[in-house]
Amino acid sequence: MLNPKTFRAELLLLLAAVIWGFAFVAQRVGMNHVGPYTYNGVRFILGALSLLPLLLLRQRSAPSRPTCNWPVTLGGGLLAGLALFAGASLQQVGLVYTTAGKAGFITGLYVIIVPLLGLLWGQRTPRSTWIGAIFAVAGLYLLTMSDRLTLAEGDGLVLIGAFFWACHVLIIGWLSGRHVEPILLACLQFVICAVLSLVVAVVSEPISWAGLVGGMWPILYGGLLSVGVAYTLQVIAQRDAPPAHAAIILSLETVFAALGGWLLLHETLGGRGLIGCALMFAGMLLSQLSFSRATPASNESVGMAEPSPIGEERR
Image 1: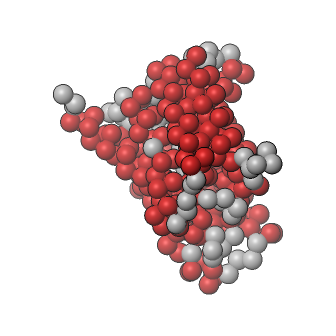
Image 2: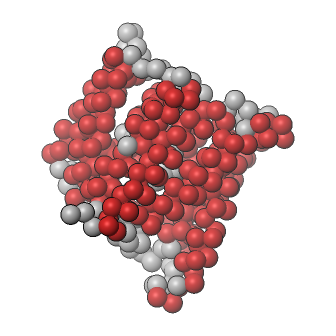
Image 3: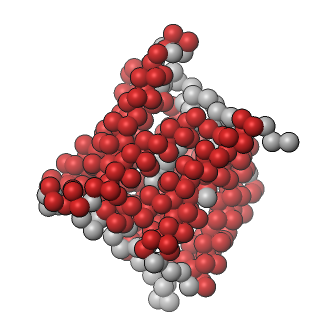
């Protein structure tokens, strides 16, 4: 019988996956009013602010936690923020030219790229990861390649962004266990990403109050729900959810992205695209299952792989 605490944790993870999946819709709608860098800059500032209550709560229990390593936290926040900025920028600009559903599945490839990049650090990559990579590449071909064997501009940008999301996950993994406060690290990286995004926006995009007001709801969704609420749910839930279960549930983000695009933006995928999505999803599951078993999460490091950040940041 399923443990009630585990069941609750897995429901919270499912809710986080739903929020992150539908965030791709919000990101597309938001750009009807503001530019991609403006959207990212404002939403990551909101995301950082939304984590402040959680940070204050954790600070109250500071005596029971190891002392924060400030040099590593600040340096790690800068490095993670740079990777987050690159991944989020490529994803957001790519969404100008591609659909929410396709962007969700292509971004999800980072879960396969992570263990493959781990080879550079001498990490062992299970056979199932290689099989998953073959499935994912075949699916990517069916989903994104035209009859002329060319990759659409938006799909290509999102794919490059997936490599930066994978680098972000590896950076966070490297920082885990080094007495880094995870919520503080999240706030730092969000602030860095926001500042860089706004600097680029000021230089390259028109910014108007009318645009910000018009895009208020998708910006609030991307900042408060996708970054703040979903990130908090993941941090809380992964304490009690088995890593393999968490990996499977969070991978459903890609499915919810396609569902959200279909329901709210009337996006459709042909038979070839649907087969491609199915192959990519199968590849992600194979990769996450093997990777989760090889590297179980610790209580202090869980939740930091988002874009959701994760997310979401990977979102």
